[in-house]
Amino acid sequence: SWSSSDSVISIDSAGEALEPGRPYRVVLLGANGVGKTAFARIFAGAEDSMDTDECELCGDETWEKMIEVDGESATVTLLDTCDAETGSEWSQECHMQTGDAFLLLYSITDRASFLRASELRINLRRFRPAQHTPIILVGNKCDLVRCRDVSVSDGRACAAVFDCKFIETSAAMQHNVWEAFHGIVRQLRLRRDSKEA
Ligand code: GDP
Image (tube, rainbow, N blue to C red; front, side):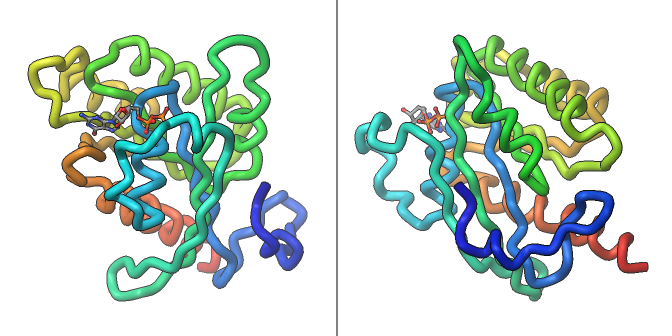
C-alpha cells in the first residue's frame, strides 16, 4: 500500500533502496491500543482529532510528508499498521520487509504490550537479519504516571538488549513524539551517509 513513488525506486543487488531523494519508509509497530494511530495523527497534523472513533482508522494507513530535521528536509512515508493479535500476522510482517525504519511502540501502562514489542523486535530480526535497521523503542502514554506498569529502566534495558534507541513519549500531551520522528530520520541519514562513504 505504498504510494505511487514505489514505481521510481530502484533496488540494488542487496535489496537496498536508500538513494537520497526517495522517501524514507517508517513503520509504526506495536500491540493494539499503544498509540500508533495517535502518533500517525500527530505526524499527519490532525492532532485535534484524538477523540474520534478509532475504528474509522482501522486498517493500514500511510501518510507522506516532508519534514525538516537538523535544517535538512526529509520526505517520510509513515505507515500505521494494525496488530493482528490472533491469526495471521501478515500485515506487520509484510511491512517488516518493506520498511526502512521502525518505531516500535508499547504503552508504559501495559506490560503485555511491552512483551509484545519484544516479540515484534525478534520477528524484525528474523526478517532483516543482515541489515542494521534503524529502530526506536517507544514507551508511549508516559502522561499516565499513576498507571505505570513498565519502568523507565526496564524500557532502557530492553532497548540495550535489542540494540536500539529508546524514548518515552505521550501522544496525548504531544510530548517527545516529534523527537521520535526526528530521531528515526537521523538514524536513517547516518545509515545512508555510511553507505555513501
Ligand atoms: P493503536 O491501536 O496503537 O493505533 O492505538 P491508538 O492510537 O488508537 O490509541 C489507543 C487509545 O489510547 C486511544 O484511546 C488513545 O486516545 C489513547 N492514547 C494514545 N496515546 C496516548 C497517550 O500518550 N496518553 C494517553 N493518556 N492516551 C493515549
